[in-house]
Length: 220
Image (cartoon, rainbow, N blue to C red; front, side, top):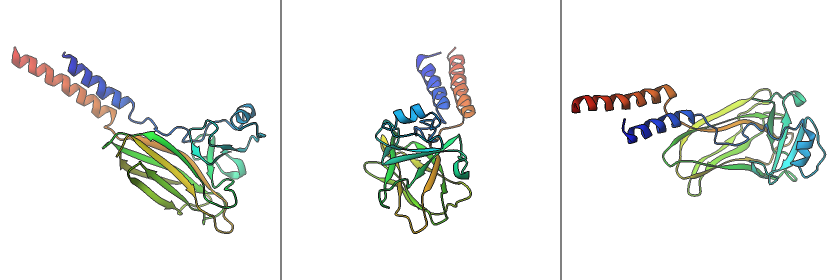
């Protein structure tokens, strides 16, 4: 079997193995573990620890950047996480009601298709809203206001996009709340590359092998 063919098969199988890798780090807000007060205080500038919720400055080594990151334990105030045992809250401590953002930059490949998704839920009432953006240095992919979520259950945003550069930024921004509103819960933030299913890739690899065997038989 030729070396280029072997390399092609290995590449196909590698794509298969990485197909569902989440490009967002900490998309489930599972770290730091807010039940571990020693870990919380280490990542929070020594601020006192609560085992039910804590907020952190984004610059303290977190994968999310921007303003504050607030993390809730699943079940606190009757709110179960969408997945895992923790979730994030947007609009936390917005410095007098003004907007603030959390964001994360990740690597993309031009012309590669991706799926972006996240769960969101109103904290206090159905008037809550926030802005979701996905952009590169040169273009805006998504810029939407999410205001269709409700207090009692999680909603799910999911859509596809095509990479337009090697770096893409995902950002959530609070919007100045109306009277009686408090914040928005975020969980299960994910960006994954869309590639053929592993089974299809395996068939493609087998097809490459079959083509090579046929060529050898004809040459003989």
